[in-house]
Length: 128
Image 1 (cartoon, rainbow, N blue to C red):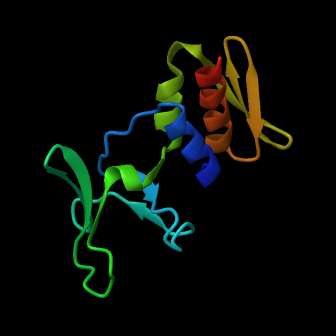
Image 2: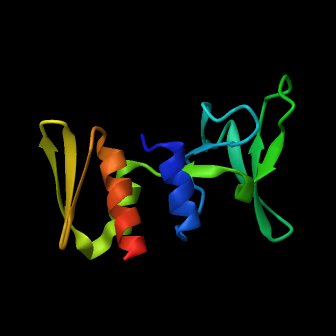
């Protein structure tokens, strides 16, 4: 899984998120940075409310958090979502001694985790 720092950098760099079932996210700065939530049709749903997206937590009466605006959470994209962001720049993913390497048309990015290598590659493209 990508780090919260990488996810925040992706958002700051302009990566847009259209929440869908199976997407992971965190609620930062509320003492829940280590809790990863998943959008699900049963427990965590996305609603349109007055022109913005609101993420609702269903069946969580014991929580003080019933819903939160999308702009207040940070998306943790999965491997295939990060690969899609690379588009035609992506050449391959390969296992290397210390983890994984994502090869682009003009650079290579390594990390102990495949998703983190993909995130590094996306951030590289967005900063170029």
